[in-house]
Image (cartoon, rainbow, N blue to C red; front, top):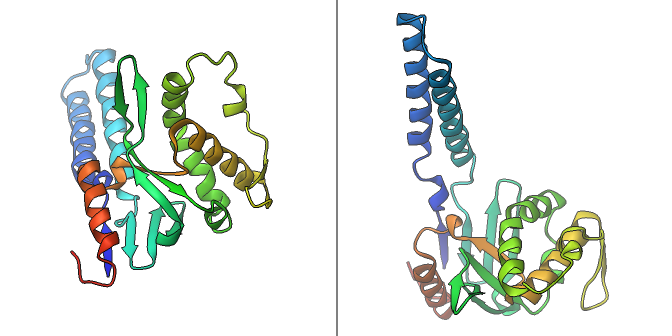
Length: 224
């Protein structure tokens, strides 16, 4: 069994790039036919073209496959590296929720709670750890705002020491140490160690969770 997931983030990459080119061409055309184009129009068209180009290029450079699911486990692919977890190391996975007044709000991530975080920390590269720390900062802020609103000092969640001692006593230094501490914090706040953005999935997050459960229980069979 092998199931490859193509991320939604890759969609419309060429559309964004095309819009960027069209807006830039329109800007050039306007300046060729008129000498009195207002500065505001130039700024708006130029900035919008640049934003579309950045979005398009960002989508183009994303890997065509974000997750590879096999009989052995799950491998997450990112332009900065990859991590992988065995099925046997997964306690559970679900969509994290935060308290919002009188109701619960879904976070746009799929979370994985692990038996042994060392399996990830021993394998992940500092480059990927750094990228995930940055990309999941918004999730951390969301969790702190709703799960720990009464805390007076959030400094320990953002000013993290570069040394982490895992549950089995292994010491991790540098970016891997910071990432290990962040995993511990996210487990405390949301209940999960690793997170995959909904943008990395190929369908609605709850549909993906149900499909992942189907793949997990059908290991060894040809499931598509």
